[in-house]
Length: 304
Image (tube, rainbow, N blue to C red; front, side):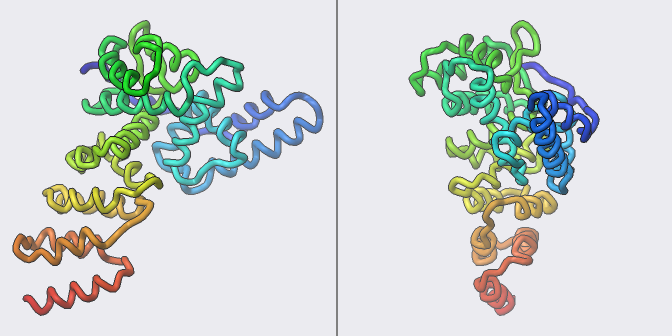
């Protein structure tokens, strides 16, 4: 694998920028201008809430093209999702479906099919730290297998061209180099691939690596069939569980649904007891409301 890209550090979005976009897309009648101004003010308010002040989301807002996508999401939904996973989902949907429809383009590949086909591409790219682009020849084997399984007609090269030319989610960095418009979209699709293809353990294996941090948090935040217990049962067996307490805490904070069960199981298995692992499990349980926690703690006290 090859192909690395430097992270661009764009400036923050501005209220005037969102208003210019709205004025340009709403017509020139007095009513249209008033409505556009009202919508742009609501959009700016949405972009300045606490949830949108993270470095990753500010990088989205600082890029004019990506800011346009946020504006499109706001226009389609009437609001912006507060959780970044849902925001990424809406951005991907806009790029793969609504943008093509808005431009009157025929849908050679349906949006949902395109997303499913791009998930293995994102996964393949993410296996090498820092890799955000690759040649069509390098991506072809991954896509050929996926497209065949999905019974889609376009070959790999044709599929890449369709997504590049008609959605913008996958962009051509040069004549023969493809990558996702923003690293966040790659990470989101990697998380979806891990969830849908039962690759949770493979993500756990990278716990503590900065390149996989956002993938981990997005995976745990997915609303469909939460994987928290599966993820944590795998993690508590690894040294990374005790080595990265801050990241474990962040996982607990951002997971859609948390459970005390994986940590209680650690405390109940006295044959393989480890002071460090027990301490990490107790720290993870802090603040959880589960009657079993008191019972297990009492049992631990009696065993000492």
